[in-house]
Length: 239
Image (cartoon, one colour):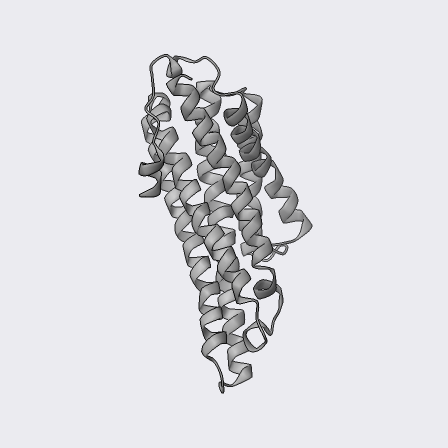
């Protein structure tokens, strides 16, 4: 297996894992996000901890994608490649804040015996609002800039994958960004059908490019003409 094929395999697997961990976390968080009286009820704290663990792994896979791709992408455009790494870091910062907001609800639920129920519910809703904003601005808005536009353009220009794949991201990213701005100004709900449709092309682009790299590898390109070092598990675990 060539060095470029190993790189493609590692990044492809990491991209696929971002989907598994993010979707798994969304399901695990279900009760805390939907029950307005979660903080005063019996709770499902184990599910929240599971969701937090999955999102922590999501952070590792997100950053891992950028780090492993960087040595190759910088040959196309070092500034954009570095921008993609930075965008991933910013996105993961938002995700981490969202994790902390939900863990804070669990802490208050477990230690809130005797506290005023109305006040606890208000605090619960406040932390949920923080989580929703971090989701909109991180995996929504910043991801549209980083993975949608920056990585999409780098993949399109380099020809590392069939150009129709990053083209979907380049078309979808402006839709995702416009949707995020419209949501901020109250044009429609964050979890509305309109927002879901706007997010679909970028999600399709990320899943497609991850699957292609994992199962097909990179297409022949001047960028793959020389070997590219693969970041190993030890390096990724230290992220």
